[in-house]
Image 1 (cartoon, rainbow, N blue to C red):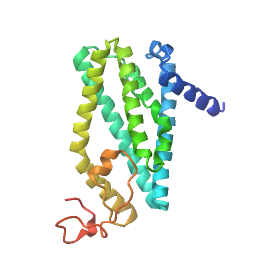
Image 2: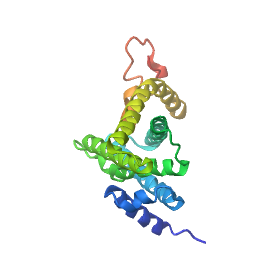
Image 3: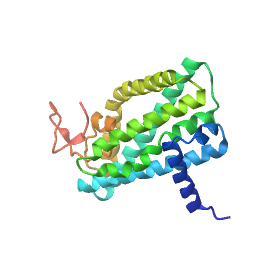
Image 4: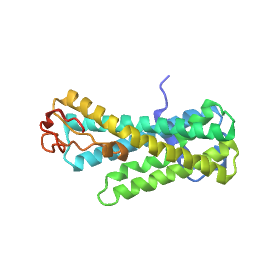
Length: 233
């Protein structure tokens, strides 16, 4: 039986609209398997849009071929990793505050649906407005997560906001702790894959955007006598 891919795409887009416009039916179905699989489609659309936005940034910066593929792949992998970590951290905060372990399907559905605003991420490659739009989408995603968590745990607004905000704050701290070692590892992987020493900084990691290649030979690090390895200080 051939899967109805087009039907799945249309259904995912409809679900995005339901999430963004806060249809009550969504919160009523948070624990259902059907909604979980639909939320996977929403996340797939969001990641596709993010990938398109990153490709646009690389194109405008004249990054082509293998370097563009490696840059986009690294950025997308780190973005997914940080999203998963954020889900775990926020879930941990919610569990500590409420003492109520929700089913895993419900938790995953909440965090996958919170990616709905990022279906517009493809537009973030636009010069001058792209960065501002990315921040708006992040805020929108935060608000969706706040609403869905409140519904999933049947919490008052202030407590749901406290949990969501605490999870976000802890994630920011973790991201800054992990940025430097992840930048070093990414630089190493890039150099091994292309044979060309490149620098991926902690700032690159924290932006969750595509890495525009910076040659270690052209941009030596302060105090480095031989920047050929692309290592960070």
